[in-house]
Length: 199
Image (cartoon, rainbow, N blue to C red; front, top):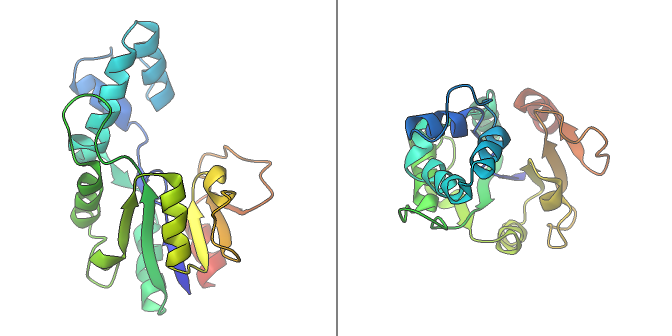
């Protein structure tokens, strides 16, 4: 089986990261709630919308040291590879931030995968990691790779017009954001995905 895996919010977990990064940069008081939307709303409501845009660039660039993998994702990758399946990271993100320092966000994501032990050692081969600029390019890549299944946290990707025909659509939904989404195989965590795909 050929399995495509998204990166942001599927492999890489950003829970609490925007809050930590905003505190690190002196942008918010510690009393702001720790989720990304609370940080965004605080900055927007205080007339600092650009500060949040720049913060995003920092998190996806130099701030990747604050990010952790989701529990169970490395075990899934290791077990899938051991069972003989081909795995690919296929994600979309702009290469440079809209504001602030011009971090190479593609390279930062690759650096995260290396630092967290996802590259080599029987996990993802370097040549199986793809970061595209747009959703259309992401789906074109997944189609070109002829994936049999794709794992993503966004229904809009799994329902994209360019989604690979016939591929199993696996929705990673650890926070239960899409309880009524019946179009896809919805899973709350990597253990559940492992059971569904690997048995």
